[in-house]
Image (tube, rainbow, N blue to C red; front, side):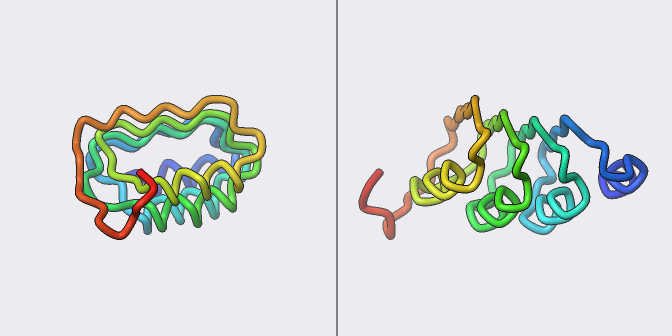
Amino acid sequence: MCRQAIDRSHGEVFDFSLEYFASHQMLEYIALRSGKLKRLSVACSYRRLCKGLDAAARKLPLLEELSLTHTTITPKAIEALGGSCLKLKSFELNNSFKEDFSDDSDD
């Protein structure tokens, strides 16, 4: 259903929310077909989306607001988002779900 909504928008999506079913493949799909996206919200995605978020962000030059709730992300991925989304005005991270990132020393 999510893919159909993206396809039917014909690239005119400005605001999109993903809850419970976000994956790096879904983020990539949205990014490839929604170049005008300004707001993205991802919630309750307990899988690591860091790589997918970084790749998607590079394809979303107009992204202004990003909200991540109960979603795992590393400090390096947050840095990459900041470097890719130059128009980003608002970044919200509400992460009561914690995962041990033993490979990231700069928490």
